[in-house]
Length: 154
Image (cartoon, rainbow, N blue to C red; front, side, top):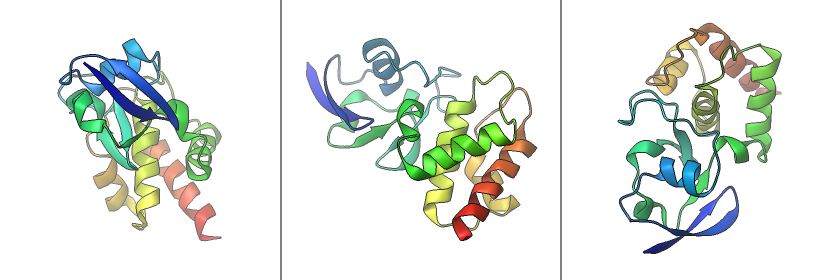
């Protein structure tokens, strides 16, 4: 079958089975390799994308369920003012080490900041829970999120 989906503002017609995980559609069919495979069961966060603005694990989402939704990946998040600020904060605070998880981390952080929830330590920990960073840059992630929140308050 073919499905019409919208990714990073562009329309695509994807020929794949409806139960194909969105992760593989993004990577293998559309060539958007910034969304990473980590665990395949939605537990590590490396495959996080936005579906209509909400952080979602793309490895656990079937293609057929995203028809009519806006999918945003790490390749597209910088086109938004908030996403660009988060990416700049990641650079300013040297968050990434190996970088493998950072696409998912940035998408989760952007969703948190967009939600309007005050990003104190507990809120950041809750929102970022399940986004695993093997390099352990959690303190820098928290610092970068707070820096963006401070910018937004001004």
